[in-house]
Amino acid sequence: MHPCWEQRDRELSRAYVAASIEFEHRWPEWYASPGGNPPIVVFAEEPTVKKRGANEWELQIPLRCQNLAGTVEVVLHSGSARERITPLEQLPEPTEPGSAYDIRQVTGCTSPKTTVTFNLADATQQPKPGAQWTDVYIVDAWGSVLARANLPKLPH
Image 1 (cartoon, rainbow, N blue to C red):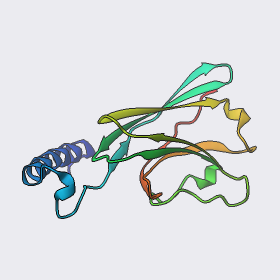
Image 2 (cartoon, rainbow, N blue to C red; image 1 turned 45 degrees about the vertical axis):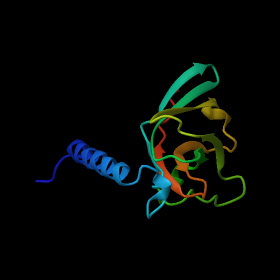
Image 3 (cartoon, rainbow, N blue to C red; image 1 turned 180 degrees about the vertical axis):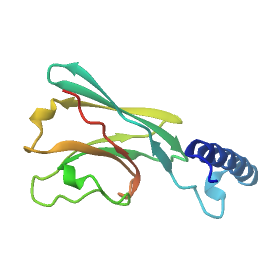
Image 4 (cartoon, one colour; image 1 turned 90 degrees about the horizontal axis):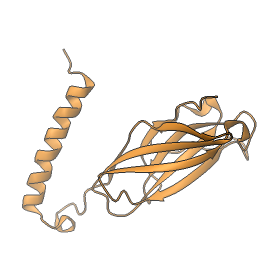
């Protein structure tokens, strides 16, 4: 039988810690290693949505960051429901002018766990009729998507 996701995560976490210890032992200065700085690794955890007022919502996105040297951009994407299935490597391209709307926020992931907060207007006041908040993307300085999280539907 294959292990469950939680067991796989525990095993990968133990392997990552062991590899990190060995790496730090061999190269106390990461940039001096043969491969240079290790790549940025960001995990977007389950976003939460809270109603703050009659027309205001607060979206919190917890991030777990490793090997961060620089900043990442958190992109809250709005589009139609049919855009929800998107390759992880890239942000969805708008199909027509004004068909998508993004809110962006830059963070340095200054600690292993960082929370990014967006304050949103009511879902009925979206920039385009029929548009809804669909996904959250974490993007590095080169525009590559590091992580993606599905956005829970805003409750009424």
